[in-house]
Every structure is written in structure tokens, then in C-alpha cells.
Amino acid sequence: MKRFLIAVLALAGLWSVGQPAQAQNKVVLGISLASDTNPFYIAMRKGIEARAAELGWEARFVTANEQVNAQVNGVQDLVAQKVTGILISPIDEVATSAAYEAANKAKIPIISIARHSRSPFESLHVIMDEVQIGREIAAFVAKAAEGKGKVAVLAGPAGAATFKNLKQGFEEEIKKASGMPIVYSRDLALTREQGLNQAEDVLVAHPDIRAIYCGNDEIALGAAQAVAAAGKKGKVIITGLNGIPPAMKAVADGNIDLTVALNPMAWGKLGVDTMDSWLKGQKTAKDKAFLKHTLVDKGNVAALMPPPPPPKN
Image 1 (cartoon, one colour):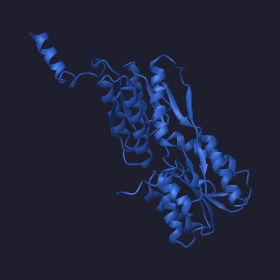
Image 2 (cartoon, helix red, strand yellow):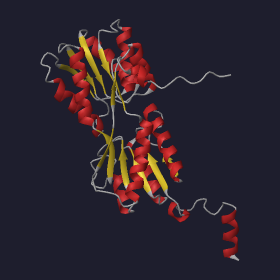
Image 3 (spheres, helix red, strand yellow):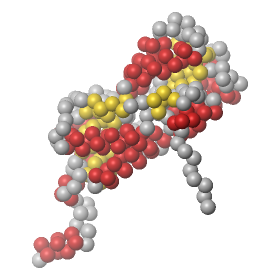
Image 4 (tube, one colour):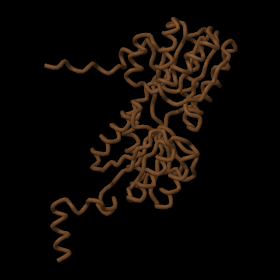
């Protein structure tokens, strides 16, 4: 009788409810991104969902929103659900270690995407070439400023290895321009509000600032507001990172000077494909999968901007 009941429930699609992921005989991918509201991660989520659907996988997201404890708890929940694999964009390279350890104990591969971890239990990471991108941004700034002028660095979160590496590359390269000292450097949250507030402080402390390096586009867009309000648009070089649509438009409009297009949707798809390869046994411990990037300035932004939506009838 029990077997008959289970068969009826299975046919009705009810038996899988509440069952562990692997009992459902399909790949279930757990995902913990650093933010639910940052446009970069919204686009990355779309890429993950699209590729997972193409593979016939189920995608289960947990919320973190830049809160380390929430991220660790969310990953532990995914482990308890016995998902097949986990993609994580760790908020802090050290403080999220418990999440990686939990996955490792359960023998669940955990692959970092966008940001990465110091945990020895990280299966691998899908990243951009962070130090090199920082160098390329600095080279752009030095050329645009003709090697002269004060520089401010609004780097991003202190605990995230990605932003440390970007900053490292930027600082290494900008030092080659002896006439461009870094006079202001801060770690900060990846928000437009923080970019605005910190840029206002920069402009008060150094009204002759020549360039502001920003860890992401949201910070850059906030900095652009401060620069415009101070009547210095076009006099201060502002750089961002990620290539989100508002930043691309800001480059086209001359409000910021540079962003780096990373295509987070493609990045999300690459993360899923990397997990697919890992699950098929095509893996090398501590390997890296690099995402291609493109510097976007006034000269090429028009060709790289997405086409406008078709008019509504």
C-alpha cells in the first residue's frame, strides 16, 4: 500500500517536495551571490538561471546581501539540502571559510565566482584577471592625465580579495607615473551612496584632485554625482568597473571616463559550465577560469552599448 501511495504521489509531482536534492535524481545547483540588489549580481543571476535551465538543472539561491553570517548560514542550508554543487561569491575572503568547510565535509564541490576565498576547501574559482585589470585602469588614467595630478582610490570592501587585487594592480601601475601620487585611499561598500560621500570628502580635502579610481560602477556613479555637483565635470577622471548599463551610459554622456565590461550574464553562464565540467570529472584542484574583459571609454562605448528596446505598439 505504501509503495502504491508513493507511486501515486510521484505521478502527481508531489513526492519531490521537501526531499533532499540528490533524492530527486537531478543536478541541483546551490547559489550564494554577494548581493541580491547590485545590478552586477542581478545580471549574473540571470546568466546562471539561463544556463542551468538549458542543462535541465534546478537552481536554488540563498540571500546574503553583503552580510557574512547570512551567507555562511545560507550555504549551510544548501549543504543540509544535499545540493549537487555550490556557486558562491564570497563576501569576505576569510570570514566565509565556514561555508567552504561545510561543503567540503559533505563532499559537495564549492566553486567561487566573481570573488574568491582563501579557504583550502575552495574547489576552484571563476574570476577576472584582477591585478592585470587594475594595471590597465591605471595605465588609462595616467595617459588621460598626461602623467600629472593627484589620485584618489575608493577601493571597495576591505575583506574581499578581488578588490585588494584590483587595487594592487592599480597602485603598482600608477606608481610608474611619478607625477601622480595617491593622496587619498579608502575601503568602502559597493554603493552609490558611499561613492558620493567619499568623493565629496576627497574634493574637500583635495580640490585639485585629478583622478578618482573606483572599485565598481556604483561607486563611480556616486563619485560622478559629487564631481558634477562641485562643478568639476570633465576635470576629474573617474573610473569604474563591471560595465553595467548605467555606467555605460555615464561613459557615453561623459560623466565617468572608463568602465570595464565584464558581462556578468556571461560570467554566470561560465560559472555553471565550470561546475558542469567539475561534476563530469574535468577538474584540477585550485585551478582558475578567467573571464575576458574590455576597457570601455568614450571611443568604443557606442559600439558596446546594448541596443535600445524596440518601441511598444
